[in-house]
Length: 488
Image (tube, rainbow, N blue to C red):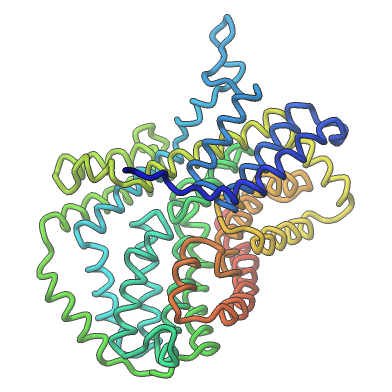
């Protein structure tokens, strides 16, 4: 006899309370807001709260939000077209044609190839072999590994859980550094915490580094700012390099490992590479196809050729992996993360677009403008960045946070005179570095903060310090660099 699937019914309480209360106070909504704008706001906020409390996985939660949006008449199922063939109201099904969602879905399938062929592990072992003579060298090797994997694997959780953490765990235990034990501080705690911050840096360097980046890309486009793969990479390059040089040594000084010399790491990596043997044919094909994808993504930033659209490049790469036999169609269909993100990212972006079309964002912008009238755009941008960063203490999802605040904050910043490019990129980067807050800040935090190597008190304390350092690096170095390359 089959049982029902488990549902977190308690997780429905807060989304329902928030949504119903907002809906009931509709007659007393702020002046200047239409009925549809407030009702859409109520559903959107309830959906975001549901993404935090997780009564269902995020895909199921957003599907519920979509169904409610259609049932109350705020969006049709299909596009409504007038007699001239012009779309007068976009339907919910149109949301599933979102290019960003398809790009990252295809990237997930490509990442499966990295894992299946063993290419990701080979890169990891080579990095440890090259830089593993001292514990700080392993820290930098883990950081370098994450930066490489950031280009190869589009999910920050997949990079941490599938590649980086297994490597960190193996190295730590090879030195008898065990979790939930005083020996954790031999080297495991240092590597665990360094791996988390390496993930932040890899996410900041690539627009495909994590889902929230793609949310920022789509919402910035609604304000007229286009983020391509290469433009994001170019904007983040210098601040990420500076942070890459500084962060591991700061962690090393702040949270020093008891073991300073690690001569066994090279032998360990050598052993793993010998077990793998020479590069297999699938590995070689995987490396060639992904290198081609990276090249085409870079070229798409320079040449406006339709066939070089970022999403199409990802489709092309997956097709090549299928016809060469590196992946099977079953591999693609079983990559549930790809189809999950295609659903929830498409729906959240559609709902955010409805907030714009019903005028909620315009109203919010004017309200904030009136409140901060007379304040310089620089100060306003600083305040918005601080709010974007520290409000993440209330979020367990970078995507939910980015979806809720990015577009309103970007709108306010530009309305106050802040340069569009600078505002778009700084707020997007803040949506990455604000993971350096809590042990539930994002997927990698949930993985690495619960291994038993780093205590929760240590996690919060050290992240508070590193969070300030991140904001200084991206706010000062990043802004100056973006000025030099003409972002603003």
